[in-house]
Length: 513
Image (cartoon, rainbow, N blue to C red; front, side):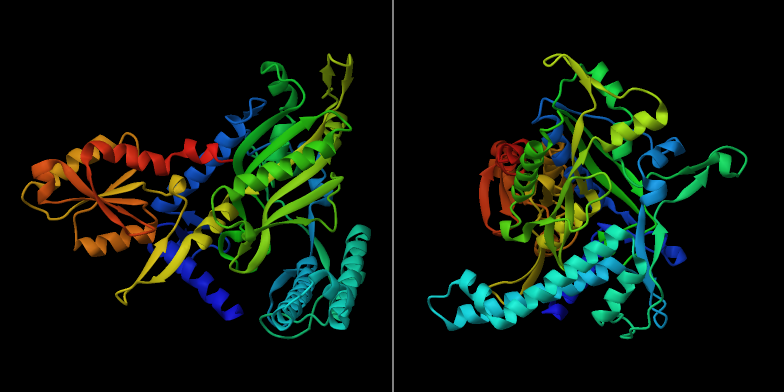
């Protein structure tokens, strides 16, 4: 199973490059580790994901507005936020492979494997017994109980060592679990050390500590420092949210997972400001809302799950992830956090400026609490690309690769394909292109046999292909082909726009949420 997943992931990565979705950055100079460029189709898909998120936030909620804060920010902001002192990951190296890993992720990998073993035991028992009761089996089976005990002990030790900042204890946990390096296969580990993940640079003409600034490691702080600006100019009333899409930068230790973890990435974040004491109500509200947003794309409810954090960040009193079933297993796709009043209170302290909201309903000032939703745009892209990638064997024995991307997000919505490059067919095709291009992103192609062109459009996820033939010149009808079913239908040119619109409309997708 692991080999199948590895092969799928390799095929997705290869496909992404071959069809203009993602390229290794600086490839002609042998690339740059953990940095990627989005190609012509990738940038279109990425922009469509942004639009889906942005419209959900700012159009479907009349109490959420958007901003675009600068990447460069005053360095004291990162002191106030805790990033200078606390934005660290516990790292260790394997002395034989020379590779570096996050210690907590190595331990979490062991926990995941134990959970997989439990599921296999449950699956085997379910096949053996007709009247199988999962709860009873989980509570009585000796092997499952042993696995559960080890999981609990491991989680408790991991949580305690992280909370105490006990790097010696964390290494001892790795030794006790007999964790080997996946590359060298040895247990020859260095000590665990904390590494700050922020990139630093200098602003101005002199490179010294006085001019040291950071590339932002998250976009949230740009929202917090603009809280009062937005609230006052927008006459916003609690509860309200501020949304932002932007680049962030982290000096990550990358575990060869393509665009899942990069040093330069994009976040789609919304900070929702609420009355103190109401944060848990809104935390649950946004958990449900965000899960519905993801599942509306139709990639299978079974591919999503909530995962509560073992170790809460310094600013949070509740936190969970929406995990997606990537080719390498369930991993974090979006984080939902109750950040309390930590950020605004800390910025008020460090800046000396009041960051309070006057609530006319209770006639008092207070610092709002915050509920955050933060989804990685690049991870969202990978979830769609990987789940859409399909290898199909057709009835005639041939095969095709198709990206079954949700139609509203597809890079191109329709391909215009004249059957031949003569007899006036290209001219007629161009007329149809001119009719549709103001409503949909269209792709025009006249090279190669029509079957080959269909396969290319399948491979980039184009929902519809329109073929112009000699009959088109006689009765103004065309053949429209559906990507997923490959069904072809003869329709009037005048009805093409409405047929496509019904399927690829972003508005129709949003209405389903």
